Image 1 (cartoon, chains in turn green, blue):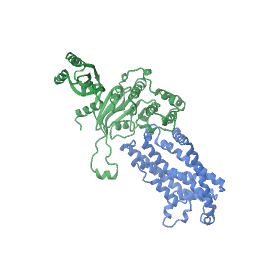
Image 2 (tube, helix red, strand yellow):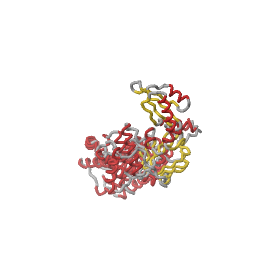
Image 3 (tube, helix red, strand yellow):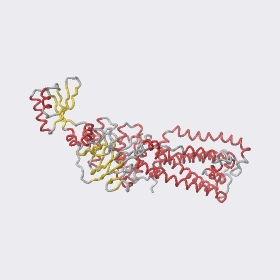
Image 4 (cartoon, chains in turn purple, blue):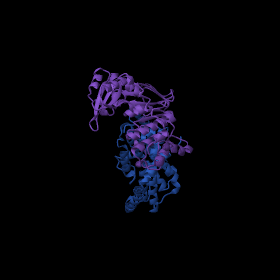
Length: 353
Length: 268
């Protein structure tokens, strides 16, 4: 049932997005009422709520994947729900392919496909095919097209053989793919994905990201916004990432560049001597910063993570210094900084609490 | 406005219910069986009740049968909207529906269509069983009876929409469907005519849609009264139905607007 990555034959994160903005968010602001009951009203009288979204501006082009990162409560899901017409903003404008999400909500719903809800938003006692046929009617697809479109959607997510199986018998991964198939039924121009690989194991998640990239980005040219907590999702899938904190954009840019700018370029050194004199000297001289050292398996080999400013050229010099000094190194490789660290540093740099 | 989406949602609910085959069949059988004891109890009370119900029917079993059948529809009208919204919000399914281009009215119609169809089937089964047990019905008055039934369902659906609006806004229906059901069952003339109620509660009965509705329904179906005779009750019922429906629709619109502002549509 897994997506066949070999068949897709594309490197992950390979497409070049079109530069026409499909999603345009300008000076968006949203506050939620602090009081949700009479008791709240009395308890919090006069208190002004902190904004869920504050002055957010963002463009997303056709074929582009944009990741929304940030701690819980940063405003990622609120932003996706405003785009999905489920939440009305207080001020600012949001247009999808030129349609305003407030005044032209029905037109917007024709061209967006949010995958926000969980697996319980499927009919578990119906087959995958019956679920898709239902949504084909809700999406007002012509009757004559329904069978073909349902077949295509099932085929695209690798569920053709399971089309007649009851959804209640599906694995979490299959349900996730069925949700994406449902989103693809109406040939949307914008996809909104909230943690699309949250219930998948690492291998299935990687295959799923490759599939999303190929199908949504390369083949269909969709603009895709992805709210995620996963490092791999931000780095493998997204052309750009937007780091949100307390509703504000604190950093924006390609994930790798942002990571390097905020955390430096990180390398992993596999060695028998994590405290080798040469490594200490490199750190003391300021050429590198030691991040962490962890023992690997047998306890003899260590994995030491260091950050090196100046990119690969400086890294080559550091590596040469270590080897010349006789430090036993089995592997020296560039690694991706953990997403949490990137987010923490972006927030720290923004000066927001 | 296309009704295909609403029909598809109703069909999905039907398929789901049908997939639980045993309970599906059993619920029909139990309904048919429960009416049999009512038949014997009603016959035992016939002599005592005949003068009390004389303005609405001659046979007490027929009197109770009409009341019980309509109560099934009233119950569906009161509870199905709130249940559909509550279930949909808590599972996230409603969120998935609201981001489709299908208008809210059709979504609700589709989400509740099966409940109404099921209640109608139950009412038909009850009346059918009653006919087999000897209830005498004036079939020529069927159009008037259908009109009364539609107005009754409309009136209570309005109350059901108000309850759904409360669910959307505050995640509670404030026991409105249950309260309306209890008051209507006790005072609306289901098991005895409203004319025998104590003077203290009689004004409440006058404001219940069920009171004029059941009276008109029994007079047409059981006594064969023409349209002119039930016009007064019909007019009162139509006024209540219009009022409830308008308040219900407006409440629901306001509730959804509020929920979109408060961001509570997807909080499950």
